[in-house]
View 1 (cartoon, helix red, strand yellow):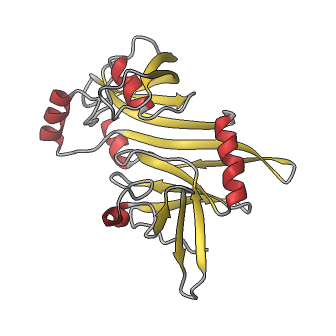
View 2 (view 1 turned 180 degrees about the vertical axis):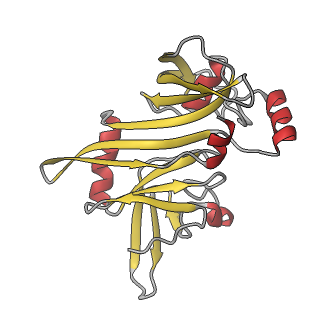
Length: 239
């Protein structure tokens, strides 16, 4: 299967069962929201939201399908996982629900954490897009301090592991704990972001899905799939 990848998306890893790991750039949608945004999605293909599946016809006219297993916000870079068949999609989705999937992110934030590592355990809104909603659910994130920027002493990097999977969880947790992610236009420090953009000329969210480890069952055998997307160069420049 030849994937019609967006030019800002790269293949990182795949296995014989049909799991595929892609590394997406900033501004790329995990799946198209509207027909006119198809070109900005992972694949240059149609997408069925109900079945969470991309589909397209190859040069021979044969229809191809591939199922989406996780999503990243458009400004977040890094790993998105897909499955080449529906059964594998269902099995790995179940692994996500059973917390058999480990995901690790890197973020550059404004501020210095009071502790070198720990767990943020705070309720987050179920629907962050609904400002009127007061419904919330428990969310947990493991955080670990990595290093302080050599350029700006108030900028540090964190390694983050979402224990639960809520919408915008990492961005909201960082913000609630006084460590807004650099370039976050929804939960960040807007004044600081403007100054940073003015002096650096860089306008992006500094959040990257760096690695994933998936434990799953396939034909009665325990399997592990892993992938790693190296940090964008721009992260290293500021650290």
